[in-house]
Structure formats: C-alpha cells, structure tokens
Length: 628
Image (cartoon, rainbow, N blue to C red; front, side):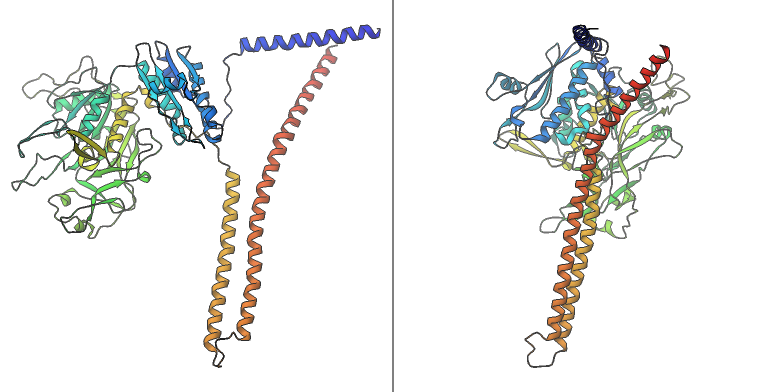
C-alpha cells in the first residue's frame, strides 16, 4: 500500500469519525431530549409528586415572566447563584408541564420597556447593588382570562419554600375562582350591634382581611348540611353544636374537606357568659365527639401558662406592668419554621390557650405548628376567671419542662364519629344531617389544622386600629393575621399543593471545614483560659508578696516580685506562641483539605475514568480477537 493510499484512508477515517460524531449528536438530541438526571444529594432539581399533579391539572396555557436584573447583580455573587437556582426550577416546571407553561426570562434594564412592564405587574425593585441600582428578582404570571399573580421578590432565606411558592402561583392561575370559606362561629366576628354598650360594632380585622381573599359564607349552627361548593370549613369557638351539625362537619371532613378549627378552654373574647356583676367570664368550646373519634385530646379545663413567654399587661394608672402567665407572646423558637403556614412568622400572641395531645393508639399524626416553651405548665381554667391580680398565678407555679402543642396540623387517616350512621331526629325516626349517598366512615388523608385559642383572632391581641382623617388605619404588632390567612390559603389549595413540603437548601455548608474550625476554636479557648489562669495566679502571687513586705521601700518591687513577673512574661510568650500555632494548624488543615479535594477532582477522577475507558477498550479488542 502506497503512502498516498494510506493518507487517503486516514482522511476517510477522520471524515467518517466526524460524520459518526454528528450522527450521534443528532440521535442523542432526538432520542434523549428531555431526559434529566438529578445527581444532587437532596434531589434539588426533582420536582415533587404534588407539583407534578398541579402541572397536570393545567387546562389552558399560563404565561410566566421571570424578571431578573442580570447586569445589575454582577457584583452580588450569592444572589446570582440563587437566581440560577430559581431559573433552573422554573425551566424544570416548564419542561414538565407538557407545553402548558410558557416561560420568558427578562432582564429589565433601567429605563427600558421591560422595566415598565415589571412595574405594571406590581413587582417592586430592591436596592441591593453597591451603587444603589434597582434590582428586579420576581415572577409574574397570567392566564387566558387575564388574571395575574406575582411573587414580588425571591428571598434567598425562603429558598426552602421556592417550589411551593411557584406551584401556588401556578395553581392560583389554573384555578382562578375565589375559594369559598364556610364560617361556623360561636362568637360574632362580623359587624353587629352590642346590646350591653348600645352601639354598633366593627368586624374583626381578621375577618376583613379574609373577605379580601376569599368568598366568606356564614353558616348557621342549626343547619344540617354543608354546601358542596365550600372549599374550607372555618370553625371558631363551636359551643354546644347539636348532633346534626356535628354530623355534617364529620361527613364534610370524611369526604376530604379541609377545616381550620379554633377551640378554646376559656375564650375571654366571648362576652355572652357575663355574670350578674357584668364581668365577662369567658366560655369554653370543644369538638369532643369528633376529637374522640380521631384520637385527639383537647384539655378543655386547662390553660397553658408560660413563664418564659408571658406578656406584661397594664395594672392601672401609675402602677407597674405585671406579667400574665395566660397571655403568651410566641417567638420563632416556638413557631414551626419548616411549615409553609408558619414559616417566617416571628411573633404570635395567644390568650388563655389550651393544648392538644394525640393518643397512643391513634392512627393520625399531630404535627405541631405553635408550641409553648419548656417553662410552661397546665393550670386550671377557673384560675383565670375573675382574676384581679395576674401575679398571683406565679405563686407555686412549677414548669413541667414539656412543650405544649397550641396549634397543629392533623395528618393521616381519620375515622367517623358516627359509625352507626346519621343521628336520629328528636321528633321521630327521621335522620338529620344526612347527606346524599351512603354515609362516609373514614378518610385516608386528613386536611385539618387545629388551634387551641380563639382570643388570638380578636383585634386586641395582634392589631391596633386608629382613625385618621375618617379612615381606619390598621397597624399589626403581631403575626396572628398572617397565620390565619396562611392557613386558609394553604388549605384552599389542592391536596397535592398542601402536600408540598419545604425542600432542602441549595447552598451546601462546608461541614468538614466547620468542624475543623470548631475544634480549633475549642483548643484556642482552652489555651486562652490557661493564659488567663496564669495571669490571675501571677496577680494573686504579687499581691501576696506585696502584703508580706515590711520594709520601707514597699512602693518598689522586691526581687521576688520581679522574678515572678519575669516568669509570667515568659509563660505569656509561650502561651501566645501556642495560640498562633493553633491558628496556623487550622489554616494548614483547611489548606490540606482543599489540596486533597483538588487532587481528587482534577487528577484522581479523570484518572479513574481513563483507566475504566482503557479497560473497556482492551476487553472489547480481546472479544473481537477471540471472534476473529
């Protein structure tokens, strides 16, 4: 074979290899398009089954507009990293929607039409840049009938709820109808007339807020059914409900209905039970019939007193405020930050609240949302009636060390409280509260939130209202309203949306480096303590030598004192050298760890892949030789 022929064969082989490479690309793009492999530890890029169900329920296209100021965030690396995370999540949503989500990524440059468009959607810029630039980092969505939903700004500290927030926006656009909230209340939360004060009363602020977001439908305690179009049942202070209404509530929940239930061992806001002197005694409420069937206990005769969270109240003009064990200001440590309903809430006030507990044989699970601190105990509810001096509650108060569950989410299977069917009417054999079809006896998945306090809904515990130029100005000083609205909003979503939980964070801490730092800090503190002990001992020794002197030159240091000081100075130099050595060893350990990781990532992994490729090639040649 001539040299020219060899050259032609080589060129032909290269051309064939190039064509084969292009063909492989075409085949992979055709056959493997849409194929994704999530190798992250916490499956950050794998959307949950609940989100998939929400995406599958989209019937008409939804437009998503992701506004992100890319150029203005060039000097904010942590925000750029999180923006990449948000963009990739949105792209995954669009890829899994079957074409029903149309995603547009927009960089709203200053003074551009895109900036005006972001502002029209209601997105507010945030000044985060070093030069005070306005930064957009939000999402707007529209549906085919013109409804709009927005996420004003993607806060990095709420990354755990990124998937839920986006899925909630999409669900709201796919289901634009206002959710119907059926309110069954034993206290007057709407505008009315107060016969004791002979004046009209304003509606509670929480009810005014709810009416802006939901269609509120008031239910009567003596009605026997709940309308089929009620999306959420909001029960507040259910006092002495008859069997017909209890059965209607039972069947509503057994049928998969969602419920937000407020009960109370002593609702001070209820002014109905006033004694002859005119002092409000408060009243209790419970759903014992239903709770017993579910395996839940509510201590209707006990109020949780909390010594750590107790609020101070005014004792009268000229007197110092006193702490009230029954009024608690919940802090982030007692508010579940992992649930979407309570995440981000920092202050919730409750008054004479009760607590829930799940029985050992119950199939349902009680997931706490609000709890007391460890410095709490259950006190008789009667102790809080006609209480002239709240400080008397502190007498002989002994915390149990337990955290009492003040509000919780009910999860798991529930059984009916009426296994024998609907209750019989008092006037005959006809049944009351019966629904169409056979009675429901159980549900596999409960969608219920329980709260052991009614007073937290009243204005006095969370909001201040002032009149200004004829307008009522509402100023909240606690997050009670946010808690209620979040709970209703969460329950208003689909069961799939309710099931979406907080995800792991995108940022990964350097746990090994952190552990090295903790060990070095412990050693550093130990050495510092040793130096301080040496200094204290030296000062004590110098004082002893000074007191023991009887010569006239007591103002001058004696040879013993000078020797003691020199000895301490020598020890000080030695200990400081040890402190510097601790820091150097820490830096050296971190540097060694980094070097090891670089060697593994840059050298070892490619080497192992090369060895594996060579081994496969050798095995293949051997097989070809054996067949030849």
